[in-house]
Amino acid sequence: MKNICVVGTGYVGLVSGTGLADFGNNVVCVDINKEKIDMLLNGKIPIYEPGLKEVLDRNVQAGRLSFSTEVDKAIQAADVVFSAVGTPPGKGGEADLDAVWKVGETFAKNLNSYKIFVNKSTVPVGTGKKVYQLISEKKNNTVGFDVVSNPEFLREGSAVGDFLRPDRVVIGSSSAKAAEIMKDVYRPLYLRETPVVETNIETAELIKYASNAFLAVKITFINEIANLCDIVGGDVHIVAKAMGLDGRISPKFLHPGPGYGGSCFPKDTLALTQIFREHGISTKLVEAAVEVNENQKRLVVGKTKQLLPDLKDKTIAILGLSFKPNTDDTRESPAKTIIPILEDAGAHVQVFDPVAMEDFRRDFPKLDYRISPYHAAENAHAIVLLTEWNEFRDMNLEKLKNTMIEPNFIDTRNVYNKRIMNSHGFRYVGMGRSLID
Ligand SMILES: NC(=O)c1ccc[n+]([C@@H]2O[C@H](COP(=O)([O-])OP(=O)(O)OC[C@H]3O[C@@H](n4cnc5c(N)ncnc54)[C@H](O)[C@@H]3O)[C@@H](O)[C@H]2O)c1
Image 1 (spheres, rainbow, N blue to C red):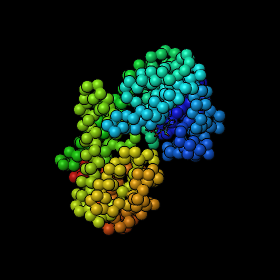
Image 2: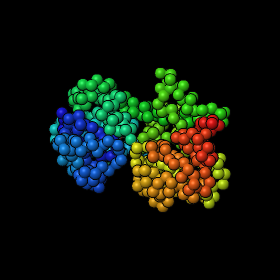
Image 3: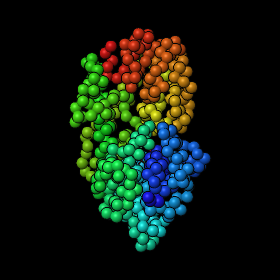
């Protein structure tokens, strides 16, 4: 059991802090955002993440988990300091590490006993070494410390389960002492024989980018196959299923859609291309995935025009604003690219999402936000389904059609079946099975 401080109480920091407390550690989650910490101190969760509240409450009640804005004090009391601050894309696509350097400086200033600085944020190769140098320069005593890379692989929407039962834990370190302490932090997982990959810092940093870029490429690949299916009359789901039966391929991440979004894949693929460039080589594969993914979002507008060639003065209902279901996170969601294109073409857009409207409103304050899918479809000439929330899987199709002016349905997640939609009077296009009944 260790005393832990988690700096940055966002999607990763809050779930990690809660999970580390559940492993039996004493955890203080800190953030510079007072509003977030106040909410947590009042028993409210600032993000939508299924199952988080229950585990969080359990650990707060057990006295193992607390929240604070007093970063200095929390670091001083900790053996291990996790940095889980944001690393958003900078102007050239590179990861902006300002917040990481800030945490490094704060760590150095409060180094009153041996501590480990753990980078949980996704950071470019070489960052761990730079953080080590920074702390060495900024600290004003002879107290020892180590830097560890411990990238996080949780998925929003299933983050709690992913953290408590991960496929693997990666520990990148050049210090045997630090590696032992980290194993103690993850003791319940270690005992359960969760694979622990011990390696150097650079390898650990690269594992995270390589994993995300690989998944982004995989999604992009099936999107391209889906686009071909649309032309040749194939069914992408059957292609994907048969591909996935090959153990070397696996069926996961072979679902076509409107392009990947979210806070990780878009920024991590861009950052990886930048890392390659900085080292004098290039990754044509990941660069292509970035470009193809941008086109995929635009293709949704093309599909809408297939059913509704002139968008001027037409009303389009958008169902789903988050980049995937079960999260309120709308960072880089396809809706953010698609809606402005529809509006530029003269369409009026009415939107609905079960939980992500508040988050979306920050960037799109003036949209026509609706209170249900049926309300969004009122007087619409087309529905574009962008996120496969459960709520959208079993809609009353008669009610939906009757409220629309023209029953056009663009299903970017293949939630519905073309034959059934046609039998209800909808004109329907999906992804990669448009010619299939
Ligand atoms: N979101 C995911 O699904 C996910 C998954 C794996 C890895 N990651 C990586 O984890 C990191 C964090 O991502 P996130 O989605 O949790 O970000 P986030 O934006 O939700 O949270 C970051 C938090 O850090 C806080 N912060 C910033 N500077 C601070 C400082 N100096 N001191 C204290 N707090 C500070 C912010 O106020 C914010 O609450 C990123 O590097 C991301 O790439 C994210």
